[in-house]
Image (cartoon, rainbow, N blue to C red):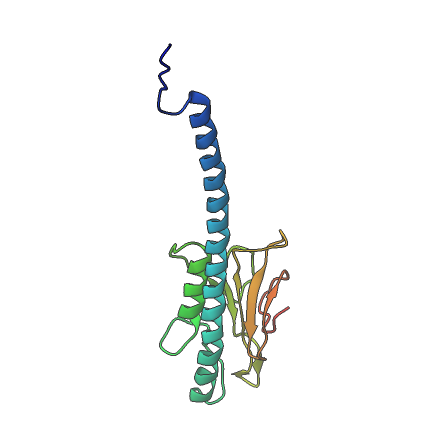
Length: 163
């Protein structure tokens, strides 16, 4: 009678199949994490701009019903909030946003330009979003009329109403 001996372990093919499956699962998980990271950054941008709207109203009342300088970076202004929101888009890089210039899909904008009898009575701010689901670049826009929305249209130079 012959005695059979069994070798314990995996064959080379079995190991390669397991490694391939792990690689596929890892790529799926990493793709999901990037999407989640972009959605998280977009939520932070929207939150910063929502807080900017409230701060702008406080600024307006405390400055004799005038938005003059609301986009600046001084105490009580919303410039720092817009700057922080843009940093969420750019992944924490320190940048400066443009005031009163045409918007782009890569920089934040804040306009407090409209003058009515020497009083600036309106403002608008726009920050690019990271997680566009449609493939087209999107921005989040807020203004003094209460608008707060995603849009593919950019603020024109000195515009104080979201497009």
